[in-house]
Image (cartoon, rainbow, N blue to C red):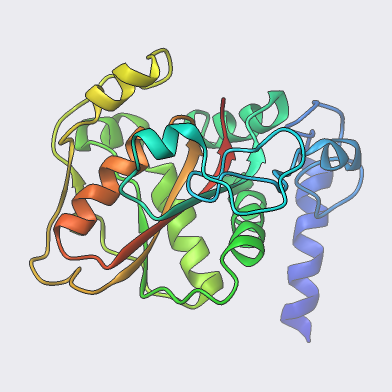
Length: 245
């Protein structure tokens, strides 16, 4: 009881000494225990149906049947399905960017909440054997200090009571430029053959849940899925915090 009481008091003391501001809008956070103010929470844009059944891209208008977008029909990805929790709008971008580039690791719990809700909503009844993160090249990992996708994958795996694949089991074999300012075609070329699934035999027949922070064209997660499937994975599904345009 005493220890539980201390755990409740410490956050309040920290908030008093180091006042927090909302990462979404910058206003002072007066209520302890919140990662976002209530206004920003209300503005989180959750991705809702209808979606492309394959890549998870939101579809405008009403769709009363299973739908696969033209992009997935013309160039089927190597993953089976991909789903994202929120739109990569101004708020979504700010949350992901702070976590990814600005050491805002305290946002992990909020982002994993979004990932877990997305898995619950879209992958109900699906059984996975392992959770895997999209890897960073070692040089970029050393420069940044951490792999944001690996942190999310580890925390999500714990929530789902699943093992998480060791980083050495899926690696990025070459340094690639950032995908941010590339066209869709350039993104595909940029990550082509950039990943390799190691641990011979470890992926055989495995059903993999692949985790990343944000997906735009899906080139990176598809390249990872290709490597995993070439190594023997039975199926690869993808979940990301945000979906860009």
